[in-house]
Length: 241
Image (cartoon, helix red, strand yellow):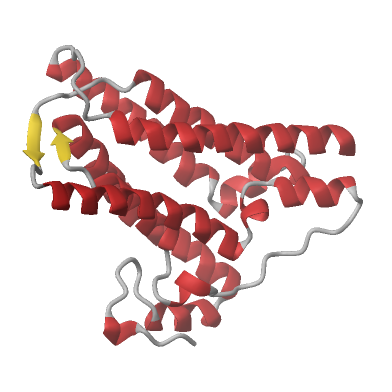
């Protein structure tokens, strides 16, 4: 793939991701609104399949072993952009084909409590976005790789760093998602199922991700993991290396 074409491809993949990210915010915000739903069994089967597709794509394609095999087919400079594109397609499929499950599990009626949950919802998504910039937003979503390829510059392996929120929790991006998904004044069965399954996947994904991080950064990451909490900043673990 030519350098200009790789840059164009990476840029398109990035903007597809960003549009999908905004669409996902709207999806979670509106998923509890009254809407017609089909049979519960059908909805469960379809939604489970969509969640599995999302989880498998994210977890499998992110593994180092898959990347080594994948880059024999996909050029190295666009490997991350291709991952971002696949992740966006999986998320779009989940949003578009998600089946409403409208049984109300809980409803918070106090205006003050509703406002708190709305603020937490916004803070959750903001935490996700800010956290990506803290570690290198454009490298995370593939733009840095294709830009350096276009400039004919070497792409260096990302250095281990713990800026800002990473000094308090090891995975602020996941934390932001979970806060946003669970901050719902009106919680329907569909939203509860979505948030519950994603939470379970996050806990598993963290184990796989940290195994890769230990392989990449060795003792440095082990020390960091021993001193900083995974998702909740417990005071007893606030010891940054």
